[in-house]
Amino acid sequence: MVLIIKDEYPDKLFREDGKRLDGREKTELRPLKMEVGVIKNADGSAYLEWGNNKIFAAVYGPREVHPHHLAKPDRGVLRIFYRMATYSVFDRKRPAPGRREKEISMIISDCIEPVLFLELYPGTAFEVFIEVIDADGGTRCASTTVASLALADAGVPMKSLVTAVAVGKIDGEIVVDLSGIEDKAGDADLPLAITWFNDELSLLQFDGSMDADEFDTCLKLGKEAAEKIYQIQLDALRSKYISIQESVNQSSNTSGGDE
Image (tube, rainbow, N blue to C red; front, side, top):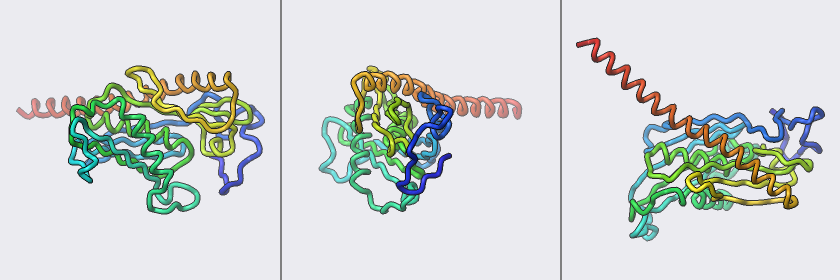
């Protein structure tokens, strides 16, 4: 882990051995861990550790829409609430949601809504609460990924999961999965999200400068990285249901032995 004090960033984002400051290769993802069913009073939930990011997502619904004028008579509503804890960043942030949090909430909603069958739930809402308890770059992509996983855990009908990752350029080189330092001190940042049912992008943002060939390379590497992350999402869901099956089998064997 590289400790950076406030806005003091290194002049170079690669080490002498050619690796990034955190020891990764150019196309290597940060360590990634996902788990579902972590919040018992939610209809569905997920937890994600992605590098130094630590994020919870909880889903509630379908339920009544408040305020009522937001309800739609022909379809359900997806409401995303992205929040960063006051202690999640180096400088303590204000508790009230800021403009950036509201913007990211809208972005995540736009990413995920195309995969949901909201027409099955007219007049109701699914609400997803995302809490970033530790932030280190790429929180919008990580939050999109974990929110999609929480909705699947809630049993909400979906066409597919949604997977997001940020690709970018640092010191003139294209890299995958930008860390917080690389995001702030790099040349370019390109977050993207993929809906797997149609293999299309549901998010594509860009900040910085790169040429057309570099942009194409980013899209290619981003898709390859997203496929790896997608498999981790699937594994997290499988692990829960394998655990349930094993518990049921164990309970059945115990009951059979008592008879």
